[in-house]
Image (cartoon, rainbow, N blue to C red; front, side, top):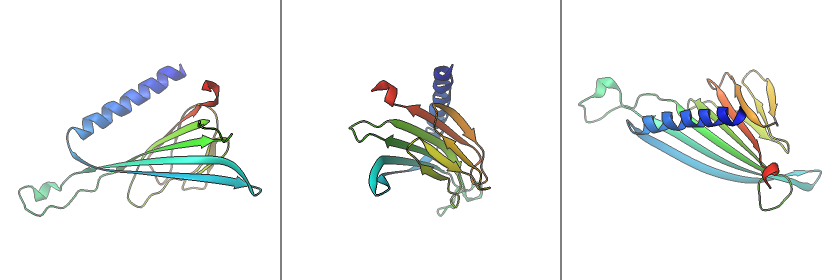
Length: 156
């Protein structure tokens, strides 16, 4: 059942993204951050975060035919992939993916932990995601956040 839900969700996400990219110009930004977290002055775990942001570039309808055009405000679609390595080997132990849309000023607050990720919404409510599955969170800063969690230790 979990596999079917994951497959359906990712198929829908890919179909939606493909349809959008075929119709409009996109601005894509990708960044990677690798950080080692220390607890009690000892290296505890490593976190690698890959953030992909995609924004559709659309012009104002009133500017059709003009040389200088203004961009319409469009949401930024964010995919954040967080890899966690607990045992300092060559393979990551956990993979968390977060999918959400945001405006230019909003920011999703989260902290990577040894067990998973702690997500905090605009109201100060926190949720620890540390078990396999797909989660949906609602926040003041984002319309909805979809989180998928995969424990990769079982496949080692």
